[in-house]
Image (cartoon, rainbow, N blue to C red):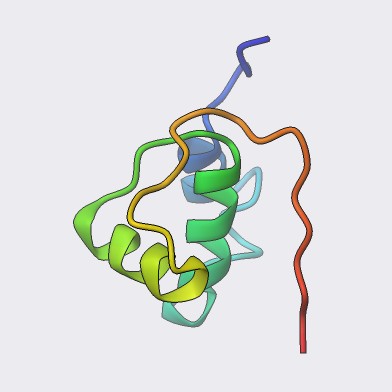
Amino acid sequence: MRPLVSMRDALDDSDLFGSILGGPTWLAWRVVLLAAMGEALTEEERAVFQRLTGRPQEPLQRVEEFWGVIC
């Protein structure tokens, strides 16, 4: 199923998630959400993804399940 709006667009739209996860302090969460939804990352985002996951590249397809350990 293809979403009506991409996660990237939703995160940039102030009427959707843009007002919640804005600013540089939310970059890691934005990257995780984009990758979990199977969206391609920018070079900057991919570097964050690699640092967080140890994986060389995002999955490029929506994951079935995501578990986050938040400390």
